[in-house]
Amino acid sequence: MTYRLRGAALVALGRYKPALKDLRRVATTHGDDAEAYFLRGLARAGLGQLWRATREFSLSIADNPFSAKAYFQRGLVYQRRGRYTRADLDFAKARQLDPRVSQESR
Image (tube, rainbow, N blue to C red; front, side, top):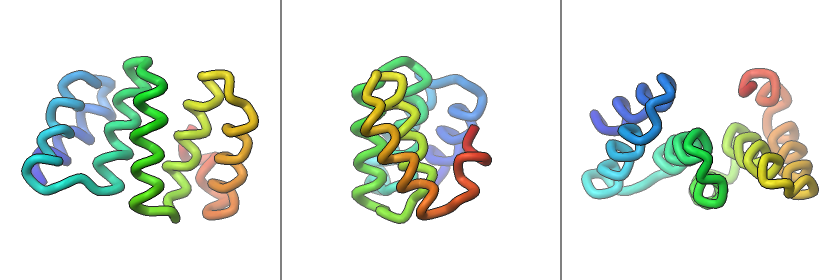
């Protein structure tokens, strides 16, 4: 739990490399889950690792298909990658799950 919390704090501070280090430890100590994948997706997006960020958000969605924030963030990454149709689909799914997510996540 400590690695997850510290990783989340580091992501919020924009310290993505040390965040990834802690978030990788989550997998070895507690196993991965939707939130760990989501946080790693944010860190990878922050580092410009867009393909890897897409993968992390997709794993988060596979573990929790009701996560509007994961769809929204994956949509942002698709948009940065120039995959506009996929981005629009993810934004629509995020709005369907939670109409507030697009306002809160920006």
